[in-house]
Image (cartoon, rainbow, N blue to C red; front, side):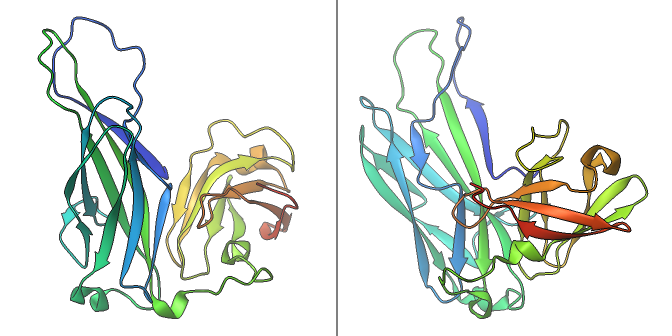
Length: 251
């Protein structure tokens, strides 16, 4: 399954004779990923009810990297809450004592899930839909928490590519997860068709989904940073080895 930063699924909990043309989430998150720094006891995530007329319940929980529901070493409070029409609230992700059992030399991956539960309707043949949103949550041990200096070089710039047969293999030499979401043949070019997003684990490697001939000798890869931004890296390849440099003014 592709490693998308934001995953949404539909839960049909009613019956309708009408076709569904468009669906919009009522309960919205204020971000597309969560960074839980080991120096913090908790992280608060903003949620809001985008429906101007109806109250909704918001149900939240965490999953591990195998997409299994968990009760620790992090927990969500409250697991269920009611949001009135147009209201805003927060969900707190709190650390438990077991957090010390996580690796302290690398990030750990979790998933934060938020499901909206609509009010019951008395209308006949009505279709009620609950949207579920899932985003990545990265637990970052205190030893890996970086300062906010403007001159600090992003760790993603340490990525390298190596040509192995007909494909490029991306190498992540860092203790952080890196998500690549787009590829171009050159700076300012169009996105490469059939490129599949990929998430590199700490010190991980993974083959890219498109051929090396398609990407050429100066491939440009887009990654997602802590704030949901999408900076780009331009790779210069020599003898099958490619080093990265940032693309100026990339967004």
